[in-house]
Structure formats: structure tokens, C-alpha cells
Amino acid sequence: MEEKEPGFPANWDEICYEIMKNILIAKFSVPELKDKLKATGDAVLIEGNNHHDNRWGNCICDRSKNKEGQNWLGKILMEVRDTL
Ligand SMILES: [Zn+2]
Image 1 (spheres, rainbow, N blue to C red):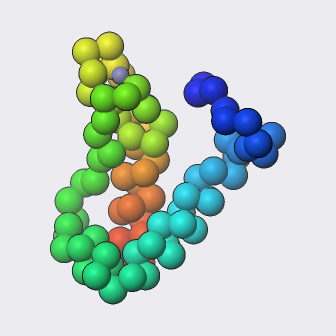
Image 2 (cartoon, rainbow, N blue to C red; image 1 turned 135 degrees about the vertical axis):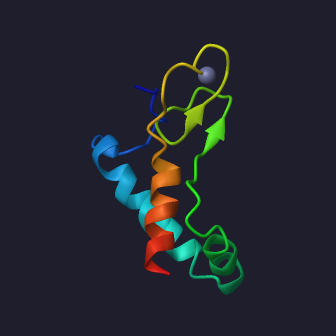
């Protein structure tokens, strides 16, 4: 598990997915951004990174590349896209 920043609620791990989803619903209510997300069609969206974040994305660094990330950010983006 990743180290938490000071000030995060104790149950952050349980609530962060829904909080991020609500943030992204708000973000993609902006027409220009909504169009960009829709334009991805049915592509699988993966938050690729190289900073070892296998919760929100999928790290592709040498150390992490053989572990599949949970890609929560990509999953949420696809969930939000399905509602547009
Ligand atoms: Zn990594």
C-alpha cells in the first residue's frame, strides 16, 4: 500500500475510488473535455506511468512491468465515458 499524505481521512482507501469518480464526472461535464473522452470510442484506457503507481494506473518501469496495475483511473474514465 502506498504511504498516505497527512490529513487524508482514515478510510481513504475505501472512499478514494468514489471521490475520484465524482471528480472525473465533474471534469468531463466540460463540453470540450467530454468530446475528447467520447472520441476515444471503445478504446481501452490505461493510465500508464513509470512512477510505480499500480493502483491508479499501470507502471511500466523495469521493476513493475511484470505486475499488472489495477488501473483505477483508466477504469473510471471508461465508466464515465459509458455515461456520456
Ligand atoms: Zn514501477
